[in-house]
Image (tube, rainbow, N blue to C red; front, side, top):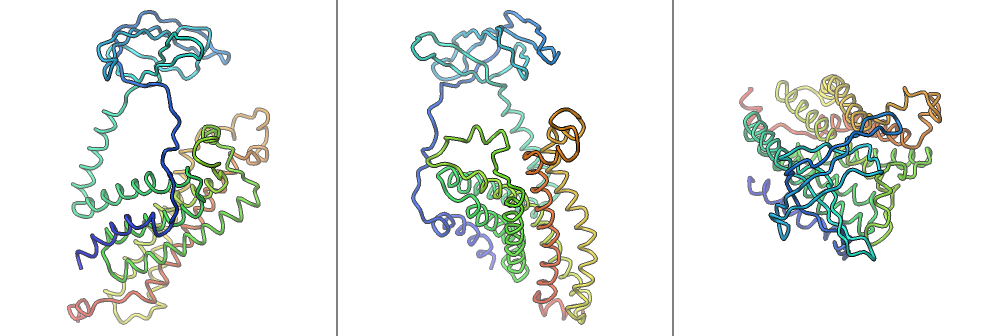
Amino acid sequence: MTKKIIIIPFLFILLFPQIIFAQEFSEDYSVMADEIFEAGVVKILEQKEVIGENGAKIIQQDILLNGLEGKWENQEITYKGISEIIVANANIYKEGDRVLVQRSIIPGDDNEQFYIIDFVRRGNLYLLAFLFAAVIIVVGRRKGLKALISLIISFFIIIKIILPRILAGGNPLLISVFGSLAILAIIIYLTEGWNRKSHLAVISVLLSLVATLILSVIFTGLARLTGLAQEEAAFLMGIGQQAINFKGLLLAGMLIGTVGVLDDIIVGQMETVKRIKEANPQLPAGKVFKLAYRVGNTHLGTMVNTLFLTYAGASLPLLLLFTVKQEPFLSFNQVINNEMIATEIVRTLVGSIGVALSMPISTYLAARWLKIKSKVLTEQG
């Protein structure tokens, strides 16, 4: 039985691309970019303060760099950041910083130019990831380790299966539905085991995703959302083998954004029903449903709020439009009529409805069909 718990999810990962999307596609959709390498800041040659159009103070710098990898290793490079072009979000660098540098050659001109793209941040990110993993394992022990494995699998499915197939011209909606279901199915079976409780949880996930999908399709249509309001859409145009379906991509994002909360609600309700039945095996299914439903109501309030705050945090700059009182956002109605804001409203509310529906669905299925092992009943008798 233990082998089933481990083997089946990984077999599902391996077979998922062939079973669901039996089509050939190439991942060679990238466009050749200018050469990028890492360098260290040796010296700030000159620094100048300029005032932007909005009155903000902007620091421009000429910097001496030292290449740190490849053919650029130990080569001195000069970055000329002082110019007439004002970049509002320009970083301020100091000696000792590690940066990413892009080398470009202007067409028709053999002169090469170097631009600092950004800081090299991965060292601190690796440290934070290690700290995160350590805390999860120490606090959660075996469950924590399984949660980390589930997280890695989820990342793998999104990066290696869902996104490449969308870039290859696949239907984002279809891909995200099966991808989301695969992610939650693997997480549930890996953390909860191969049993009736997990089977019912996966069915609850499927029903909840279908409800969320239907609502997403209906209200993105009614609100006339195109998926092109986000600024990322401009960068994605022309990338990939075929044109990207941005409306489908928007719907896919709504589904994937709901997945994490669905897992918590559904598995939590399954466990609640299980404990109620263990405490009193003689309770009828209707009574078990009512008791578990009360617990779920308390949990649901926090989960919906969590989902809202997650979307609000990611869209905080957009929420500022409610307070600026400048054209074309002079009134509340004008603000919510903007497609960017309307998209976030639909995303938040549809996701919250899907989460809310998952609670009674999972509670009913568990109350009706979740069985308690005879061993438990014997021990309590």
